[in-house]
Image 1 (cartoon, rainbow, N blue to C red):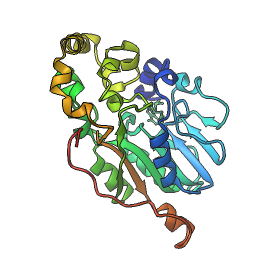
Image 2 (cartoon, rainbow, N blue to C red):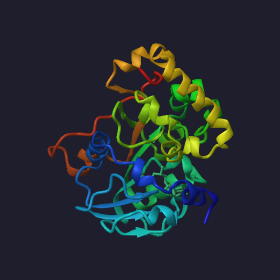
Image 3 (tube, rainbow, N blue to C red):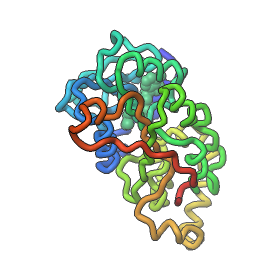
Length: 273
Ligand SMILES: C[S@@+](CC[C@H](N)C(=O)[O-])C[C@H]1O[C@@H](n2cnc3c(N)ncnc32)[C@H](O)[C@@H]1O
């Protein structure tokens, strides 16, 4: 087992308390999956965004994450880089908020292509992730966290140009790094931060001074003044992306059978755009 899953054996404790699947993100993921019958969910964690109405198998290396799953979908303990399935065993391979943890991203993505005809990957643009205010203004030590998993590499490895912007809603229920962009007080909770790997991987001494400053800025009104533009918004593009490899859901079904998954171009603005 690699070092990364061991990290989730530590930071994955309490994951289901703070990381509830968000219904709007779930709808976008499943629109891309379409009516595929056989699905593998790689880096599945506790089972967020899974559905029990398909033939689904989860792949997850961390025992702590597996221990928080219900029995809806069977799970195999393994890593993306070496999937224990024959070629093209599945219609769709899902990889949701997991790529930035893989030891060998290209190898893992090649495995997704080997075992499934289509790939649906929910990930983020590291540069846009880095421009989130909580990192630039309060915890600069977190910058560069996911530089090794740029979107261009994902597109290249999956040989696709299908990428959708996934907006981050102001009340996002999945507590990943950008979820609290309009609810700054949530970042003050060590438990919420403990389920955000950009924070959880850092020595607390690199995080706590920034959080103390954020607390002061919230009390004094400085944060609200500085981010008045955000307070007026319901969603932002914080860099979340859905990358789709292989034929679209429509192409998989045939030309006249339901809506297509739109191919969109990658947004270029920072969070708040
Ligand atoms: C942020 S969690 C996401 C879990 C789930 N997909 C979700 O959306 O909630 C990242 C997951 O990736 C897993 N992971 C880390 N390294 C991995 C690897 N090499 N192969 C597969 N999964 C890995 C972790 O153990 C963890 O469960």
